[in-house]
Structure formats: structure tokens, C-alpha cells
Image 1: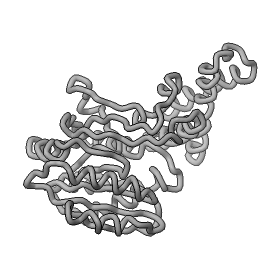
Image 2: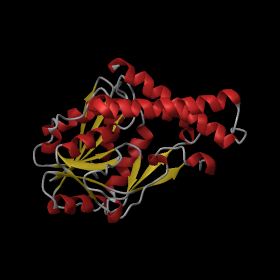
Image 3: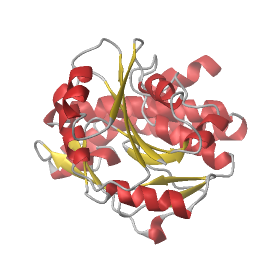
Length: 300
């Protein structure tokens, strides 16, 4: 059995686009439908789901408190074992083979594995070439082959991965203190989850036929957005090293301190930052370190 879970909040147009795209996918016999969880203030998501149910089986849920991971835990509570739970966002479109590919993966690999697929990007406006390298992978695309996958080390992005419901429950579900809409609003919540799965002995499997395209708005292709994202990425890194502690935390603290001192010195003196791209590189390093320091401090 496979089910798709989509957490959404205040993005009605994108949600409709995502559901319309999913409705065009070929449907394997074990497809049990979609769970859409709206979190925070209720918008039009329920009505959108009802308008699509004639072409796609959808269960709508509402989590009054904001937070993507809180919404995912609510959905997980409604999904029986052993169901492959395919985790998507409300801003993607799907290849026609998407559901078939995950269905085949679930049959070929028992519980104890988790899965992810490749993705491209649907830009509203293409970012400048120099800026693209500072944008997260979600805004650049990723099309690996089997040789790129390290089963005990690879993780997948949050809008295209899957795990069995029982495995997700066994490691405690999704951490509601992190991720979009959480108190920290940090990034990388799916990476933290999958690292926990690795630690529990679960292996990552690439599903090459499960291709999606991620919508990237013009607002997320600007230097300022990249700097804001760097801050949140620093927070996510801090969350991980706080959980690990010990030598990993000491090494990470030292690494961030050295990188920050160098970047701050460049900004202060102007040495080596005459090129705008090098200036931005220094600013990016400083912002990421600031996010790290802000999130690591409570455990200091």
C-alpha cells in the first residue's frame, strides 16, 4: 500500500497545481490515495481538495497549530502499517511514472529502507548564474544515478521522499521543534529525520522514476533570500550537532568560528572582496554562522 502526504499552508494556487498534476499520474493497484494536511489558519485547502476528489482520492486534515512536521505527524497518525508514506510538498509537479515508481520500490524493498527521487526546477525567473551556487539544492535540481547514492549516508529532500509508516513511528515521528512553521523555522528537517533513520540501520534507496519538478518563485532567487536561507541553514546545522554533542559539537564550533573570523575580516577590511561575488560569499558565510550561533547557544 502507498499513500501520498502533502502538508500545506496558505498556498492555494500551488496546492491546486500540485493536486492536478498528481491526478494525471498512472495509478498502481496499491495506491490508497492522498492525505492533505493544512496547518495554521485554515484557508481554501479543504475546498480545493473537494474539487479534486472526483479525479483523485483525497483525505483532508487540519492542524490548527502551524508547523510542517506537526502536520506530518497528524497525517502519520491516520496511516496504517505497513504503508509506504510518500512525502511531498504543495509546490511540485509530477512525472507520470511517479506513483508506479514508488509502488515498485515498496514491493522490492521491505521495511527498513527509505526512498527518494530526482527533481528538476520550475523557475518563475532564472537566477543570475553567480547566485545559483548559493541557492539550496531545492532551487537547483538534482538528478543522480545509482553510483551517487550511499545507502548509509545519502538523504533526500523533503518534497520527494518516502518511508514506511511503521519505520517513521518507530523512530519517534517527525521533530516538531524544527522545520518550516516551527518555533525555529529552520531548514533541513527532513535531513535530520533521515539521519535518525540511518542511525537506526535503515538504508537509502534511489527511485529514479519518481521524478518531480519543484516550483521556485522569483522571490527565492534573490541575494537577500539566499542570505536569509543561509541563516536558517546555520540553525539546522546547530540542531544536528546539538543532538550529537561531544567531539562533533567541538569540531563544528571550531570550524564555524574560524570561517566566521575570516569572512568578517574580509568585510571589515575590504581585502579580497572587490569582486561582488566574493563580497557576497563573505556575507553568506557570516549569515550562516550567525544562524548557527543563535541556535547552538541554548546548549552551550
